[in-house]
Length: 132
Image (tube, rainbow, N blue to C red; front, side, top):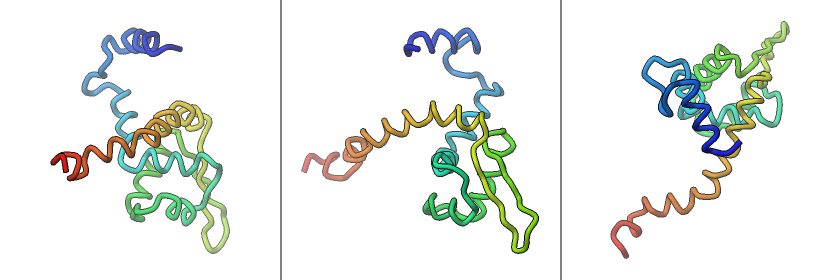
C-alpha cells in the first residue's frame, strides 16, 4: 500500500492523520515507541528469550525498566510470558501473533534509522554545527 493510501486509511479510521488526545492509537504508539519498547520487540524478533537473555540483548536497560516494558507489552497483547513451574523460576518471553504483525511494520522504520542514523548523528556533533 502506498503512503498516500495509508494516510487516506488513517483519515478514514481516525478522522485526521494525527490521533487525538485520548485516542487508543496514541496509547499503543506510546507503548510501542517508548524508549525501550522498540528495542525489546526487536530483541524478541529472533524468537523466545529468557529474562537474562533479553536484558543482555537490550544493553543499558535496568531490571525495573525491562520489567515495566515487558508488563506493558504483555498487557497490550504483543508479548507472551510463559512461566515454567520449576525451581529456580524459568520465564520465557516471545512475540504473540499481534506482536509479529507489529514487528513486520516496525522493522522498516528501524532499517531506515540504521541507514540514516550516521547522517543524522553527524548533524548533532559539535563540528557540524560550528562549521569546523
